[in-house]
Image (cartoon, rainbow, N blue to C red; front, side, top):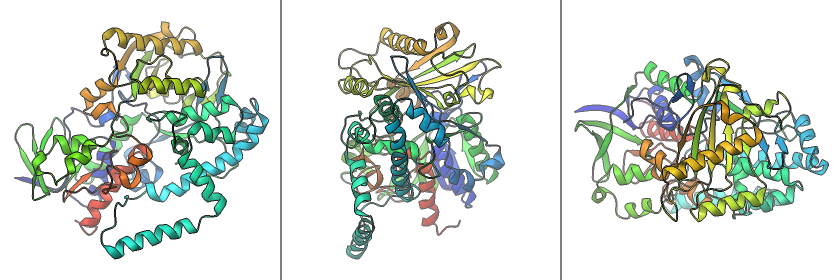
Length: 532
Protein backbone atom coordinates (compact mmCIF):
# COMPACT_ATOMS: atom_id res chain seq x y z
CA UNK A 1 0.00 0.00 0.00
CA UNK A 2 1.23 3.50 -0.87
CA UNK A 3 2.01 5.33 2.39
CA UNK A 4 2.71 8.92 3.50
CA UNK A 5 3.43 10.78 6.72
CA UNK A 6 0.22 12.79 6.30
CA UNK A 7 -2.77 12.88 4.00
CA UNK A 8 -4.90 16.02 3.68
CA UNK A 9 -8.44 15.50 2.41
CA UNK A 10 -9.50 18.57 0.43
CA UNK A 11 -7.40 21.17 -1.38
CA UNK A 12 -9.23 24.21 -0.02
CA UNK A 13 -7.26 27.10 1.46
CA UNK A 14 -7.06 25.58 4.93
CA UNK A 15 -6.10 22.17 3.60
CA UNK A 16 -3.36 23.71 1.47
CA UNK A 17 -2.10 25.81 4.38
CA UNK A 18 -1.89 22.70 6.58
CA UNK A 19 -0.13 20.75 3.83
CA UNK A 20 2.34 23.57 3.15
CA UNK A 21 3.30 23.86 6.83
CA UNK A 22 3.82 20.11 7.15
CA UNK A 23 5.79 19.85 3.93
CA UNK A 24 8.08 22.69 5.04
CA UNK A 25 8.63 20.76 8.29
CA UNK A 26 9.89 17.80 6.27
CA UNK A 27 6.82 15.57 6.27
CA UNK A 28 5.85 13.50 3.25
CA UNK A 29 2.43 15.03 2.46
CA UNK A 30 -0.26 14.01 -0.01
CA UNK A 31 -3.29 16.24 -0.70
CA UNK A 32 -6.37 14.59 -2.22
CA UNK A 33 -9.32 16.44 -3.75
CA UNK A 34 -12.30 15.24 -5.76
CA UNK A 35 -12.37 18.40 -7.91
CA UNK A 36 -10.42 19.00 -11.11
CA UNK A 37 -8.77 22.15 -9.69
CA UNK A 38 -7.53 23.10 -6.20
CA UNK A 39 -8.99 25.85 -4.06
CA UNK A 40 -12.29 24.52 -2.73
CA UNK A 41 -14.70 27.42 -2.18
CA UNK A 42 -11.92 29.76 -3.37
CA UNK A 43 -11.12 27.91 -6.59
CA UNK A 44 -10.59 29.89 -9.78
CA UNK A 45 -13.79 30.47 -11.74
CA UNK A 46 -14.54 32.23 -15.02
CA UNK A 47 -18.10 33.47 -15.25
CA UNK A 48 -17.29 34.47 -18.85
CA UNK A 49 -14.05 34.25 -20.85
CA UNK A 50 -11.48 36.47 -19.10
CA UNK A 51 -13.77 37.36 -16.16
CA UNK A 52 -12.35 35.69 -13.03
CA UNK A 53 -13.73 35.65 -9.50
CA UNK A 54 -14.34 33.08 -6.75
CA UNK A 55 -17.56 31.20 -7.48
CA UNK A 56 -18.80 30.71 -3.94
CA UNK A 57 -17.24 33.35 -1.68
CA UNK A 58 -16.97 37.11 -1.87
CA UNK A 59 -13.21 36.96 -2.29
CA UNK A 60 -12.24 39.79 0.04
CA UNK A 61 -9.35 39.36 2.43
CA UNK A 62 -6.26 37.22 2.45
CA UNK A 63 -4.15 35.16 4.78
CA UNK A 64 -2.82 36.87 7.92
CA UNK A 65 0.69 38.27 7.38
CA UNK A 66 2.02 35.76 9.96
CA UNK A 67 0.93 32.76 7.88
CA UNK A 68 2.03 34.33 4.58
CA UNK A 69 5.48 35.02 6.07
CA UNK A 70 5.80 31.58 7.70
CA UNK A 71 5.17 29.88 4.37
CA UNK A 72 7.23 32.29 2.27
CA UNK A 73 4.33 32.94 -0.09
CA UNK A 74 5.97 36.08 -1.50
CA UNK A 75 8.71 33.85 -2.91
CA UNK A 76 5.98 32.12 -4.91
CA UNK A 77 4.66 35.30 -6.46
CA UNK A 78 1.94 36.29 -3.98
CA UNK A 79 1.28 40.02 -3.74
CA UNK A 80 -1.42 41.90 -1.85
CA UNK A 81 -3.48 44.97 -2.68
CA UNK A 82 -4.59 47.18 0.20
CA UNK A 83 -8.19 48.39 0.03
CA UNK A 84 -10.08 50.99 2.03
CA UNK A 85 -12.85 49.82 4.35
CA UNK A 86 -15.82 50.04 1.98
CA UNK A 87 -19.05 52.02 1.60
CA UNK A 88 -22.59 51.51 2.87
CA UNK A 89 -25.48 52.96 0.88
CA UNK A 90 -29.04 53.49 2.13
CA UNK A 91 -32.47 53.64 0.46
CA UNK A 92 -32.77 57.41 1.06
CA UNK A 93 -29.66 58.04 -1.08
CA UNK A 94 -27.24 58.62 1.80
CA UNK A 95 -23.93 56.81 2.12
CA UNK A 96 -21.20 56.25 4.68
CA UNK A 97 -17.63 55.55 3.55
CA UNK A 98 -14.76 54.14 5.60
CA UNK A 99 -11.21 55.47 5.41
CA UNK A 100 -7.94 54.18 6.83
CA UNK A 101 -6.81 57.71 7.66
CA UNK A 102 -8.16 58.56 11.11
CA UNK A 103 -8.71 62.26 10.47
CA UNK A 104 -10.50 61.64 7.16
CA UNK A 105 -12.66 58.92 8.71
CA UNK A 106 -13.72 61.17 11.58
CA UNK A 107 -14.65 63.93 9.12
CA UNK A 108 -16.83 61.39 7.34
CA UNK A 109 -18.61 60.46 10.58
CA UNK A 110 -19.02 64.13 11.47
CA UNK A 111 -21.27 64.55 8.40
CA UNK A 112 -23.84 62.66 10.47
CA UNK A 113 -22.85 63.51 14.04
CA UNK A 114 -19.94 65.45 15.52
CA UNK A 115 -20.53 63.59 18.79
CA UNK A 116 -20.13 60.26 16.98
CA UNK A 117 -16.91 61.47 15.36
CA UNK A 118 -15.48 61.95 18.84
CA UNK A 119 -16.99 58.67 20.07
CA UNK A 120 -15.26 56.71 17.30
CA UNK A 121 -11.91 57.10 19.08
CA UNK A 122 -13.22 55.20 22.09
CA UNK A 123 -14.99 52.66 19.87
CA UNK A 124 -11.81 51.97 17.89
CA UNK A 125 -9.85 51.66 21.14
CA UNK A 126 -12.33 49.13 22.52
CA UNK A 127 -12.37 47.10 19.29
CA UNK A 128 -8.57 46.99 19.13
CA UNK A 129 -8.39 45.98 22.77
CA UNK A 130 -10.89 43.17 22.21
CA UNK A 131 -9.17 42.02 19.00
CA UNK A 132 -5.74 41.94 20.65
CA UNK A 133 -7.19 40.05 23.58
CA UNK A 134 -8.47 37.45 21.12
CA UNK A 135 -5.23 37.24 19.14
CA UNK A 136 -3.48 34.68 21.38
CA UNK A 137 -6.60 32.49 21.33
CA UNK A 138 -6.91 32.65 17.53
CA UNK A 139 -3.25 32.11 16.63
CA UNK A 140 -2.91 28.72 18.32
CA UNK A 141 -4.84 25.53 19.00
CA UNK A 142 -7.85 25.76 21.28
CA UNK A 143 -7.81 23.60 24.36
CA UNK A 144 -10.85 21.66 25.48
CA UNK A 145 -11.20 19.98 28.83
CA UNK A 146 -7.88 19.56 30.59
CA UNK A 147 -7.15 15.92 31.37
CA UNK A 148 -6.33 14.92 34.94
CA UNK A 149 -6.93 16.54 38.30
CA UNK A 150 -3.80 18.68 38.42
CA UNK A 151 -3.96 19.71 34.76
CA UNK A 152 -7.56 20.81 35.29
CA UNK A 153 -6.62 22.75 38.43
CA UNK A 154 -3.75 24.50 36.64
CA UNK A 155 -6.06 25.48 33.77
CA UNK A 156 -8.65 26.93 36.16
CA UNK A 157 -6.05 28.86 38.18
CA UNK A 158 -4.47 30.22 35.00
CA UNK A 159 -7.87 31.40 33.77
CA UNK A 160 -8.62 32.97 37.18
CA UNK A 161 -5.29 34.81 37.11
CA UNK A 162 -6.05 36.25 33.67
CA UNK A 163 -9.47 37.45 34.81
CA UNK A 164 -8.06 38.95 38.03
CA UNK A 165 -5.46 40.91 36.06
CA UNK A 166 -8.14 42.80 34.09
CA UNK A 167 -9.07 46.23 35.42
CA UNK A 168 -12.72 46.42 36.58
CA UNK A 169 -13.69 48.98 33.91
CA UNK A 170 -12.06 46.89 31.18
CA UNK A 171 -13.77 43.76 32.45
CA UNK A 172 -17.14 45.53 32.33
CA UNK A 173 -16.50 46.61 28.74
CA UNK A 174 -15.51 43.05 27.82
CA UNK A 175 -18.63 41.52 29.33
CA UNK A 176 -20.88 44.03 27.56
CA UNK A 177 -19.25 43.26 24.22
CA UNK A 178 -19.69 39.51 24.58
CA UNK A 179 -23.20 39.57 26.05
CA UNK A 180 -25.19 42.41 24.49
CA UNK A 181 -27.07 42.51 21.20
CA UNK A 182 -25.22 44.43 18.51
CA UNK A 183 -27.95 47.08 18.34
CA UNK A 184 -27.84 47.77 22.07
CA UNK A 185 -24.05 48.01 22.12
CA UNK A 186 -23.99 50.44 19.18
CA UNK A 187 -26.80 52.52 20.72
CA UNK A 188 -24.55 53.07 23.74
CA UNK A 189 -21.67 54.22 21.52
CA UNK A 190 -23.28 56.32 18.76
CA UNK A 191 -26.36 58.41 18.05
CA UNK A 192 -26.49 58.38 14.23
CA UNK A 193 -28.57 55.61 12.65
CA UNK A 194 -26.31 55.77 9.58
CA UNK A 195 -23.14 55.21 11.61
CA UNK A 196 -24.70 52.34 13.58
CA UNK A 197 -26.05 50.64 10.43
CA UNK A 198 -22.70 51.00 8.66
CA UNK A 199 -20.88 49.20 11.46
CA UNK A 200 -23.59 46.58 11.96
CA UNK A 201 -23.85 45.64 8.30
CA UNK A 202 -20.11 44.85 8.09
CA UNK A 203 -20.35 42.58 11.13
CA UNK A 204 -23.51 40.65 10.20
CA UNK A 205 -22.31 39.20 6.89
CA UNK A 206 -21.91 35.43 7.06
CA UNK A 207 -23.45 35.02 10.51
CA UNK A 208 -26.68 33.55 11.79
CA UNK A 209 -27.48 36.34 14.24
CA UNK A 210 -29.53 39.46 13.66
CA UNK A 211 -28.64 42.93 14.94
CA UNK A 212 -30.92 42.47 17.96
CA UNK A 213 -29.83 38.92 18.87
CA UNK A 214 -28.19 38.43 22.29
CA UNK A 215 -24.36 38.13 22.18
CA UNK A 216 -24.38 39.62 18.67
CA UNK A 217 -22.16 42.54 19.71
CA UNK A 218 -19.22 40.12 19.75
CA UNK A 219 -19.35 40.02 15.93
CA UNK A 220 -18.32 43.68 15.81
CA UNK A 221 -14.76 42.60 16.66
CA UNK A 222 -14.31 40.53 13.48
CA UNK A 223 -13.32 43.34 11.07
CA UNK A 224 -10.64 44.50 13.55
CA UNK A 225 -8.72 41.26 14.02
CA UNK A 226 -5.93 42.18 11.59
CA UNK A 227 -5.91 45.90 12.34
CA UNK A 228 -2.82 47.62 13.75
CA UNK A 229 -2.13 51.08 15.14
CA UNK A 230 -3.72 52.93 18.01
CA UNK A 231 -7.04 54.57 18.85
CA UNK A 232 -6.36 57.58 16.59
CA UNK A 233 -6.43 55.55 13.38
CA UNK A 234 -9.38 55.09 11.03
CA UNK A 235 -11.52 52.17 9.96
CA UNK A 236 -9.94 48.74 9.39
CA UNK A 237 -8.73 48.07 5.87
CA UNK A 238 -8.46 44.88 3.83
CA UNK A 239 -5.52 43.12 2.20
CA UNK A 240 -6.65 41.27 -0.93
CA UNK A 241 -4.39 38.95 -2.95
CA UNK A 242 -3.52 40.40 -6.35
CA UNK A 243 -5.06 38.03 -8.86
CA UNK A 244 -7.83 37.10 -6.44
CA UNK A 245 -8.04 34.03 -4.20
CA UNK A 246 -6.81 31.92 -7.14
CA UNK A 247 -3.40 33.62 -6.77
CA UNK A 248 -3.35 32.56 -3.13
CA UNK A 249 -4.14 28.98 -4.14
CA UNK A 250 -1.33 29.06 -6.74
CA UNK A 251 1.18 30.30 -4.14
CA UNK A 252 0.20 27.60 -1.63
CA UNK A 253 0.43 24.83 -4.21
CA UNK A 254 3.81 26.26 -5.17
CA UNK A 255 5.04 25.91 -1.57
CA UNK A 256 3.71 22.36 -1.41
CA UNK A 257 5.44 21.37 -4.65
CA UNK A 258 8.73 23.07 -3.72
CA UNK A 259 8.88 21.09 -0.48
CA UNK A 260 8.17 17.70 -1.95
CA UNK A 261 4.44 17.51 -1.27
CA UNK A 262 1.99 16.06 -3.77
CA UNK A 263 -1.44 17.15 -4.93
CA UNK A 264 -3.78 14.66 -6.58
CA UNK A 265 -6.96 15.98 -8.16
CA UNK A 266 -10.04 14.02 -9.20
CA UNK A 267 -9.21 11.72 -6.28
CA UNK A 268 -12.28 11.53 -4.07
CA UNK A 269 -11.88 10.02 -0.60
CA UNK A 270 -14.94 7.89 0.23
CA UNK A 271 -13.80 6.12 3.42
CA UNK A 272 -11.23 6.41 6.18
CA UNK A 273 -9.63 3.22 7.43
CA UNK A 274 -9.59 2.88 11.21
CA UNK A 275 -9.22 0.28 13.91
CA UNK A 276 -9.75 0.67 17.65
CA UNK A 277 -10.44 4.43 17.23
CA UNK A 278 -7.14 4.95 15.40
CA UNK A 279 -7.03 5.94 11.71
CA UNK A 280 -4.39 4.55 9.37
CA UNK A 281 -5.44 5.27 5.79
CA UNK A 282 -8.03 6.30 3.23
CA UNK A 283 -10.00 4.65 0.44
CA UNK A 284 -10.61 6.45 -2.86
CA UNK A 285 -13.70 6.21 -5.02
CA UNK A 286 -11.80 3.89 -7.41
CA UNK A 287 -11.08 1.47 -4.55
CA UNK A 288 -7.43 2.48 -4.10
CA UNK A 289 -6.16 2.42 -0.50
CA UNK A 290 -3.46 4.81 0.74
CA UNK A 291 -1.91 4.65 4.20
CA UNK A 292 -0.79 7.54 6.40
CA UNK A 293 0.44 8.21 9.93
CA UNK A 294 -1.88 11.25 10.17
CA UNK A 295 -5.00 12.18 8.26
CA UNK A 296 -6.33 15.74 8.18
CA UNK A 297 -9.79 16.53 6.89
CA UNK A 298 -10.51 19.84 5.20
CA UNK A 299 -14.19 18.92 4.95
CA UNK A 300 -16.77 20.27 7.33
CA UNK A 301 -17.25 18.46 10.63
CA UNK A 302 -20.39 16.60 9.56
CA UNK A 303 -18.91 15.35 6.27
CA UNK A 304 -15.64 14.46 8.04
CA UNK A 305 -17.25 12.07 10.52
CA UNK A 306 -20.65 11.11 9.18
CA UNK A 307 -19.65 10.54 5.54
CA UNK A 308 -16.09 9.18 5.77
CA UNK A 309 -16.47 6.66 8.61
CA UNK A 310 -18.71 3.72 9.29
CA UNK A 311 -20.72 4.98 12.23
CA UNK A 312 -20.16 1.79 14.21
CA UNK A 313 -16.40 2.47 14.10
CA UNK A 314 -16.77 5.84 15.82
CA UNK A 315 -16.44 6.23 19.60
CA UNK A 316 -19.69 5.94 21.52
CA UNK A 317 -21.76 9.13 21.43
CA UNK A 318 -19.68 10.83 18.73
CA UNK A 319 -22.33 10.53 16.01
CA UNK A 320 -24.83 12.32 18.26
CA UNK A 321 -22.36 15.05 19.19
CA UNK A 322 -21.48 15.73 15.56
CA UNK A 323 -25.18 15.67 14.65
CA UNK A 324 -25.85 18.45 17.15
CA UNK A 325 -23.40 20.84 15.45
CA UNK A 326 -25.50 23.52 13.78
CA UNK A 327 -24.76 24.21 10.13
CA UNK A 328 -27.14 26.50 8.27
CA UNK A 329 -26.96 28.19 4.90
CA UNK A 330 -27.42 31.92 5.36
CA UNK A 331 -26.25 33.50 2.11
CA UNK A 332 -26.63 33.27 -1.66
CA UNK A 333 -23.90 34.25 -4.11
CA UNK A 334 -24.45 36.34 -7.24
CA UNK A 335 -21.62 36.65 -9.78
CA UNK A 336 -21.75 39.23 -12.57
CA UNK A 337 -19.55 40.13 -15.54
CA UNK A 338 -19.83 43.79 -16.64
CA UNK A 339 -18.88 45.23 -20.02
CA UNK A 340 -18.01 48.63 -18.53
CA UNK A 341 -17.14 50.25 -15.24
CA UNK A 342 -20.26 50.79 -13.09
CA UNK A 343 -21.00 54.38 -12.14
CA UNK A 344 -22.19 55.45 -8.68
CA UNK A 345 -23.54 59.01 -8.82
CA UNK A 346 -24.53 58.89 -5.14
CA UNK A 347 -20.83 58.67 -4.18
CA UNK A 348 -18.07 61.25 -4.58
CA UNK A 349 -16.27 60.87 -7.89
CA UNK A 350 -13.30 58.52 -7.53
CA UNK A 351 -14.30 57.49 -3.99
CA UNK A 352 -11.39 55.27 -2.89
CA UNK A 353 -13.50 53.40 -0.34
CA UNK A 354 -15.43 51.73 -3.17
CA UNK A 355 -12.43 49.46 -3.73
CA UNK A 356 -13.09 47.89 -0.32
CA UNK A 357 -16.64 46.92 -1.21
CA UNK A 358 -20.17 48.26 -1.25
CA UNK A 359 -22.90 47.23 1.18
CA UNK A 360 -26.50 47.78 0.12
CA UNK A 361 -28.26 48.06 3.43
CA UNK A 362 -31.10 49.58 5.34
CA UNK A 363 -31.02 50.77 8.91
CA UNK A 364 -30.92 48.35 11.82
CA UNK A 365 -34.72 47.73 11.94
CA UNK A 366 -34.61 46.70 8.26
CA UNK A 367 -31.73 44.31 8.98
CA UNK A 368 -33.73 42.78 11.82
CA UNK A 369 -36.71 42.27 9.49
CA UNK A 370 -34.43 40.55 6.95
CA UNK A 371 -33.11 38.31 9.73
CA UNK A 372 -36.69 37.48 10.78
CA UNK A 373 -37.52 36.48 7.19
CA UNK A 374 -34.52 34.13 7.14
CA UNK A 375 -35.43 32.62 10.51
CA UNK A 376 -38.97 31.98 9.22
CA UNK A 377 -37.49 30.51 6.00
CA UNK A 378 -39.08 33.03 3.69
CA UNK A 379 -37.57 34.20 0.37
CA UNK A 380 -35.71 37.44 1.10
CA UNK A 381 -37.66 40.64 0.53
CA UNK A 382 -35.09 43.24 1.56
CA UNK A 383 -31.79 41.46 2.21
CA UNK A 384 -28.46 42.89 3.23
CA UNK A 385 -26.20 42.68 0.16
CA UNK A 386 -22.40 42.81 0.36
CA UNK A 387 -20.85 43.72 -3.00
CA UNK A 388 -17.24 43.60 -4.13
CA UNK A 389 -15.95 44.84 -7.49
CA UNK A 390 -12.38 43.55 -7.16
CA UNK A 391 -11.39 44.56 -10.68
CA UNK A 392 -11.51 48.22 -9.57
CA UNK A 393 -8.22 47.70 -7.74
CA UNK A 394 -7.03 44.53 -9.52
CA UNK A 395 -7.47 44.93 -13.31
CA UNK A 396 -6.03 41.45 -13.91
CA UNK A 397 -9.41 39.92 -13.05
CA UNK A 398 -11.25 41.14 -16.17
CA UNK A 399 -10.50 42.16 -19.77
CA UNK A 400 -9.38 45.79 -20.24
CA UNK A 401 -12.17 48.25 -19.47
CA UNK A 402 -14.46 45.52 -18.13
CA UNK A 403 -15.20 44.37 -14.60
CA UNK A 404 -16.39 41.55 -12.36
CA UNK A 405 -18.88 42.02 -9.54
CA UNK A 406 -19.29 39.59 -6.67
CA UNK A 407 -22.29 39.85 -4.32
CA UNK A 408 -23.09 37.93 -1.14
CA UNK A 409 -26.79 38.14 -0.31
CA UNK A 410 -27.24 37.79 3.46
CA UNK A 411 -30.23 36.06 5.09
CA UNK A 412 -31.15 33.65 2.29
CA UNK A 413 -32.53 30.37 3.73
CA UNK A 414 -31.36 26.99 2.50
CA UNK A 415 -34.93 25.62 2.49
CA UNK A 416 -38.19 27.51 2.39
CA UNK A 417 -41.15 27.17 4.72
CA UNK A 418 -43.55 26.95 1.80
CA UNK A 419 -42.53 25.39 -1.48
CA UNK A 420 -39.07 24.98 -2.95
CA UNK A 421 -36.47 27.20 -4.54
CA UNK A 422 -37.95 27.06 -8.02
CA UNK A 423 -36.42 28.61 -11.13
CA UNK A 424 -38.91 31.44 -10.79
CA UNK A 425 -37.84 32.19 -7.23
CA UNK A 426 -34.17 32.03 -8.22
CA UNK A 427 -34.85 34.50 -11.04
CA UNK A 428 -36.75 36.73 -8.61
CA UNK A 429 -33.72 36.83 -6.31
CA UNK A 430 -31.48 37.73 -9.27
CA UNK A 431 -33.87 40.50 -10.30
CA UNK A 432 -34.02 41.79 -6.71
CA UNK A 433 -30.22 42.03 -6.51
CA UNK A 434 -30.04 43.69 -9.92
CA UNK A 435 -32.73 46.22 -8.94
CA UNK A 436 -30.92 47.04 -5.71
CA UNK A 437 -27.69 47.56 -7.64
CA UNK A 438 -29.48 49.80 -10.15
CA UNK A 439 -30.67 52.04 -7.31
CA UNK A 440 -27.07 53.09 -6.63
CA UNK A 441 -25.66 52.49 -10.12
CA UNK A 442 -28.32 53.49 -12.69
CA UNK A 443 -28.01 51.55 -15.94
CA UNK A 444 -25.88 48.76 -14.49
CA UNK A 445 -28.45 46.20 -15.69
CA UNK A 446 -27.62 47.16 -19.31
CA UNK A 447 -23.92 46.40 -18.72
CA UNK A 448 -24.37 42.81 -17.54
CA UNK A 449 -22.72 40.27 -19.85
CA UNK A 450 -23.24 37.24 -17.63
CA UNK A 451 -24.90 36.57 -14.29
CA UNK A 452 -25.23 33.47 -12.09
CA UNK A 453 -27.08 32.90 -8.81
CA UNK A 454 -25.93 30.25 -6.34
CA UNK A 455 -28.27 29.35 -3.49
CA UNK A 456 -27.10 27.55 -0.32
CA UNK A 457 -28.37 24.28 -1.78
CA UNK A 458 -26.23 24.83 -4.91
CA UNK A 459 -23.18 25.41 -2.74
CA UNK A 460 -23.84 22.16 -0.85
CA UNK A 461 -24.38 20.11 -4.01
CA UNK A 462 -21.43 21.53 -5.94
CA UNK A 463 -18.74 21.79 -3.28
CA UNK A 464 -19.99 19.34 -0.65
CA UNK A 465 -20.46 21.87 2.14
CA UNK A 466 -23.27 20.84 4.50
CA UNK A 467 -26.22 23.22 4.28
CA UNK A 468 -24.22 25.53 2.01
CA UNK A 469 -22.81 26.99 5.25
CA UNK A 470 -19.77 29.00 4.13
CA UNK A 471 -18.74 29.40 7.80
CA UNK A 472 -18.48 25.57 8.17
CA UNK A 473 -20.71 25.77 11.23
CA UNK A 474 -22.52 28.57 13.02
CA UNK A 475 -20.21 31.08 14.67
CA UNK A 476 -22.34 31.72 17.74
CA UNK A 477 -20.37 31.76 20.99
CA UNK A 478 -21.47 28.25 21.98
CA UNK A 479 -19.82 26.90 18.81
CA UNK A 480 -16.55 28.81 18.97
CA UNK A 481 -13.15 28.55 20.67
CA UNK A 482 -12.90 25.42 22.88
CA UNK A 483 -16.37 24.34 21.68
CA UNK A 484 -15.38 24.19 18.01
CA UNK A 485 -15.95 21.72 16.42
CA UNK A 486 -17.90 20.50 19.48
CA UNK A 487 -17.66 20.75 23.27
CA UNK A 488 -14.77 18.84 24.78
CA UNK A 489 -12.71 18.75 21.61
CA UNK A 490 -11.87 22.31 20.72
CA UNK A 491 -9.26 22.54 17.99
CA UNK A 492 -7.87 20.19 15.37
CA UNK A 493 -7.49 16.97 17.35
CA UNK A 494 -10.46 14.61 17.48
CA UNK A 495 -11.56 11.59 19.54
CA UNK A 496 -9.93 9.38 16.87
CA UNK A 497 -6.16 9.02 17.14
CA UNK A 498 -4.19 10.48 14.23
CA UNK A 499 -7.30 12.14 12.76
CA UNK A 500 -7.45 15.94 12.66
CA UNK A 501 -9.81 18.62 11.37
CA UNK A 502 -8.14 21.37 9.35
CA UNK A 503 -11.30 23.03 7.98
CA UNK A 504 -13.01 26.11 9.48
CA UNK A 505 -15.25 23.66 11.37
CA UNK A 506 -12.33 23.63 13.82
CA UNK A 507 -10.95 26.53 15.85
CA UNK A 508 -10.60 29.42 14.98
CA UNK A 509 -13.27 28.89 12.34
CA UNK A 510 -13.70 31.56 9.66
CA UNK A 511 -12.35 34.31 11.94
CA UNK A 512 -8.79 33.79 10.65
CA UNK A 513 -8.33 32.68 7.05
CA UNK A 514 -6.00 29.69 7.03
CA UNK A 515 -5.94 29.59 10.84
CA UNK A 516 -7.58 26.17 11.14
CA UNK A 517 -5.09 24.68 8.69
CA UNK A 518 -2.12 26.26 10.46
CA UNK A 519 -3.30 25.01 13.86
CA UNK A 520 -3.89 21.47 12.59
CA UNK A 521 -0.43 21.34 11.04
CA UNK A 522 1.10 22.57 14.32
CA UNK A 523 -0.58 19.75 16.24
CA UNK A 524 0.59 17.10 13.76
CA UNK A 525 4.16 18.42 13.75
CA UNK A 526 4.21 18.62 17.56
CA UNK A 527 2.93 15.04 17.83
CA UNK A 528 5.91 13.94 15.71
CA UNK A 529 8.38 15.81 17.88
CA UNK A 530 8.67 18.70 15.45
CA UNK A 531 10.56 16.66 12.88
CA UNK A 532 10.10 13.94 10.32
